Figure 1 (cartoon, rainbow, N blue to C red):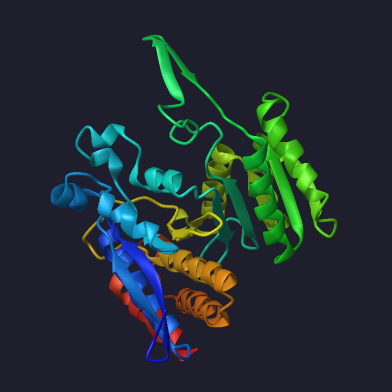
Figure 2: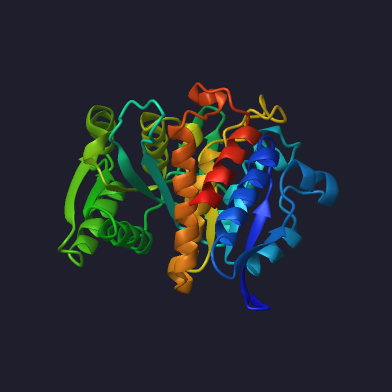
Length: 362
């Protein structure tokens, strides 16, 4: 949207719960600075209620007005939510993030894990991306049109349904190979076909089929249990890892910790026309309001969001803005400015101010 010669990028913003009330506003400031440093470009933020505050104001953690607001947007930032602390019946319902992913078919969860200068890591050379299928698999909140994929026919028996469809496997496989072409042209397919031969076998075979359209990309595959060991031993050898829902969730958390800290692990959830930035970590209620939270993961998630918008709208200024954020975060960490979870002494505000100064300096 252009106004007075300035292109305005509309981005939704939901604070969520816990530390979301600190890291989301900090992220908005950093995005404003990075985008504003580009010629004739600015952000228009659309604030939408979600979480505990929405329960108090609207009687539900995800009001219809919030979903309607997201309908009108193609990008938004979701702060962490603490659905385990919601009153019933909301505690037992689909989480806010799950509800939004399901409604907008955000089928690709892209989770990078990269070692940063100045941050101690188990795998100092790690620079990989986990491409996680986000709508099916073994997660009970995502594999049914109505109802839950978990059920108990008797009090002593619990069952779960895993769903794998060719269409979902193909589209996530294609996401992984397209991404690999922009990186080191290497895709690792994750499965467990020695036990789950039909379900993860379908996932593996469909991804193999997609690979035929990308002859320039090297392909290998591993069982999920073997891959966890390989990541610990030689995490720097991997580029793009494509996995079904649960395997992707576990692997990305492991890779995030190996590359430095899960508190720094960014992600976006995407469909063909929507993108949601969401840090991989939770709402950390134990430190909420203390100005101690590490905002890095959400800063980097926002940078990923800007890159998605740059690709979709063909606007290189957004790519430059994303680069500003990444360079500023790396510069701050390399200079020794870090929050307590990384062994530093900086508060959320102090770290944010350092990143802001560096983003404007580039």
